[in-house]
Length: 337
Image (cartoon, rainbow, N blue to C red; front, side, top):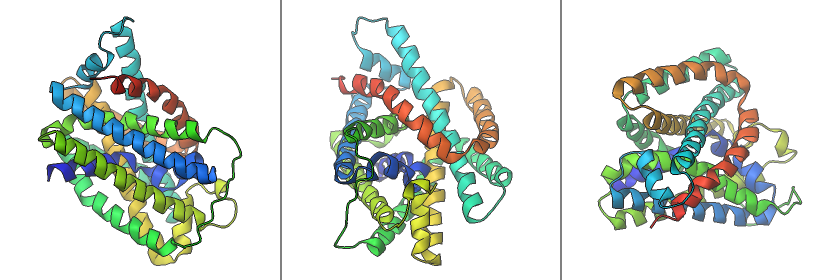
């Protein structure tokens, strides 16, 4: 039970609106054809190792907070430790907060595109829902992921089977040599959300075998889900780059039932990632329960207004930047003993 709970939380943190909509897969992998498929393998392995290494360090040193993790990760580096910690904390917490806002924007974008619901209504709905769940702390995250992640995986596999063809043709859209850089950046910015949410999972892990199981299951699950998104993208004819949510578009082409089934995926992916990233941010910046509750109310209120900035713009412009910045965190984590 503990291992599955951890796996569901981790997958929930990764499979967000950018992933489920197909926008991330298209931008970072699909446009590079065969190299993009190799890129997925590189990213998944990096994420798997980041999960394993972080959980191992957290369990070994019985770490309680992100600050404690940074102390171990930075170790005896002769630069000013306090400056490194401030920089890393700023990068991580900023990205977590932005990810929360991006997911809220994705929620409003989906309901506007599919059901033509005004942005103000959907943005208020997601803000209230997130506020209620976040007040339950990590229990709220676990409950949400236990309800939504299994459903998301089942629906995605059904769509993968529906779109699978033995003659899968890989087309290279972007003819540059930076596919491997994008693969690393994808793992890097996803690890920012992951590492923060891994800290409170310590109590659900009994030993090193559990850590290995969690890492391996996550690698397999994320690989399968990435493959399904690639199949969905490959079923689209025309200029995919102009479609804001290409996987949603592809599922709609399969029929009305599949369109609304994929709607479950999008909503679930948005909410799970929004809750995971917001919880990571609140847990990092709130020293007391009272402060946690006040910060929760504040970010949920702000999310209503940020949602109007647009989902696609936020994903395309911010994620690659934080991928570069997130490399610093990964390097420190990987050097831990």
